[in-house]
Length: 202
Image (cartoon, rainbow, N blue to C red; front, top):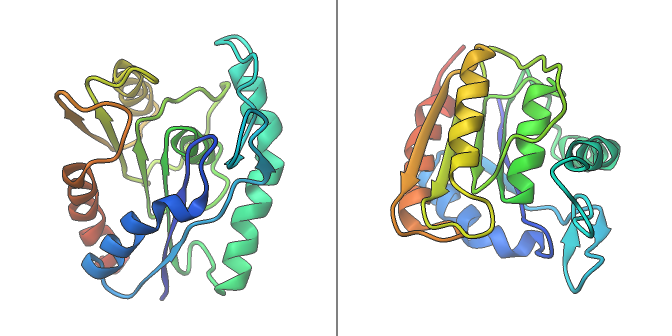
């Protein structure tokens, strides 16, 4: 059985920006494959990449942007699965994202794109259009700084409520005084969350 974590960057960033987190997790978690892909399209307001455009985005249009991004996102993940010969269900696949990457991770969860061993969403929100069909046995950890000026931490609180109501097992970790970033404490909390899930024999 293989174990793979796909780390998904935020808008205007790139996969290499999460390699530090990936290195830490690869040292902490046993025999895990870490993938840090770039988003499928160049960021349309500067350097880097994006999963979907935020140019002119509103609360009303965000769900449609996410839905439009799904095909290219799925192709990116499926390409990684093929490259590493990972078969979700037989093997353990974890999606973990920061900001826009977190949004896409949660979208994959609620649309049951793949059997997932877990989802870890840093500084994100659940903005996918309903109805949802999440796999009820996919544990989720939502990590968010309480001083985040980009995506308010209440978005993760709200996501936890919605996912819990949908039957998903959700854990949260809110960090006082932390802005829009991934901290060492957040990375450690996530590693401790993932370790038993990845080592469990189902």
